[in-house]
Length: 239
Length: 293
Image (cartoon, rainbow over all chains, first blue to last red; front, side, top):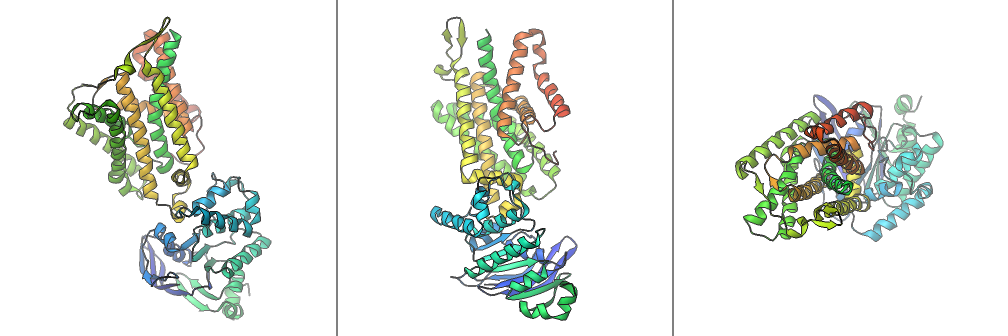
C-alpha cells in the first residue's frame, strides 16, 4: 500500500530522518518504534504532508489504482487519497464538540449518509464518545480524547490510518483498550501505521516493525521476532 | 430628542460593528490585524459610486456589485500580501498589512483622485419621516435591521455550515485542521471575502448617511472599528458587534449631552482603548490567549 524509499527530512540544519526505507503492506499493522528524536514523528508527518523539506520517494498505491509518488503533496491531498492521521498529543479541538470534531474529520466527504454511518461506527467502537457527543472536546479525559483522535482519523474513510503515539500519557488499562481497538480497526480492513514509544504493546500487535535510532533504521523484522530479540529486549523492553 | 440620538447611535454602532467583525474574524483565524480592512470599507463606497455613475447601474444592483467587488479585493489582499507570509514570523504579516493599507489608500488617491465625491442616495432612504415631534431618517431604522440580518446570517454560517466549522477549527489549531483534509487556504480566503463584504456593506451605508466619500474615509472608522473589536474581545464576533455598539453610543451621546466636548469625539474611542487595555486586555467577550500582537 505504501513504500518509502530513502526518505530524508530536514529542519533547517537538522537532518532528522537520514534515508530510511519502509514498506507497509495492504492490510498490515506496521509500527515504527524508537526513542524521542529518533525520527518516527518526522517520518509519519512526511507521509501526512505536514513536512515541507522532504527528499526521497513516498510511493502510495490506492486500493483501486496504480502506484504514485506522493512526497511533498499537501495534507488535504493525502486525506483525499485515503491517508488519515491521528496526530501526536491527540490535538482535539477543545472548543468544538465531540460530534463537531468527528465532522471535521469527514470534511472532504460529501456523502452525508456515509458520514453518518461512519460516525455511528465510531460511536460503536467507542461508546463513551457517544455518551459525550455534545460535550466540548476540551472537557474530555485524556483517554477519551485519544479515542476521539482515533475516531476522527477514521471519519475520512481512509485506507491507511496512521497513529502517532496513541498510548502517550494513558494509564496502562487504557493503553490496552486503545491497542485492542487498533487491532479491531485493522481487522475491519484498514491498513495501520503505528508510531510508538511503548515498544512492547506496539510489537505485540504489529505484523512488521522498524526500530529507529537517530534518524535511521537500526533494526527491522516481524513484531513477534523483535519481541524475542535480545538487543530489542535490552534497549526497549526494559531488559 | 433622545429617540433621535438613540437611532443615530444605533446606526453608527452598527456601522462600526460591521467593520469590526472583519478585524475580529481575520484576527481569530490568523492572529493578524488586517490594517487594510478599513480600506475595504472605503472601496465598498467607491464601488457604489462608480457603479451608479460610470456604469450607470441602478442603485440596488450597484450595491450587489460593490459587495462582490470588495469581497474579491479582500481575497486579493490575502493572496498577494498575507498568504506568501503564512509561515513567516507574525510581525512580517503585520508590517505587510500596514504596507497594503498605505498602498490601497494611495492607489485610490491616484485612481479616484482626492476630490470628495457625492454618492447617489435613493430618496426612500433619506426622506425624513416624522412621528409627531420625532424626525428620523429611514436609514437610521434600516441600517440596524440590515446589520442584524447580516450578523445573524454570519453566525449561521459560522455555527451551522461546514466552512464555518473549518473556520472555528482553524482559529484554534491550523495544522490539525489541515490534517483533517480542510483546504485551509480556501477557508481563509473565504474569511477575507466575508469580512470585506461586511466592511463594504458598512461603507455603502456610511456613504448613505454621510454622502461625501474620499480615499481616506476608511481611516478613522477603520481605527474605531478596530478599537471596537479589541474592546469587545478580539476574536469574538459577538464581541465585535457589542464593542461597535458601545463605541457608537458613547460617541453620539457624548456629543449630544456635552456639546462642548464634540471636538474630542474621536478621542473618546482611543481613551476607551487605553482603558480597556489597562483593565481587561482580553476585552469584554474575549478569551484568554497566550500571545497577541
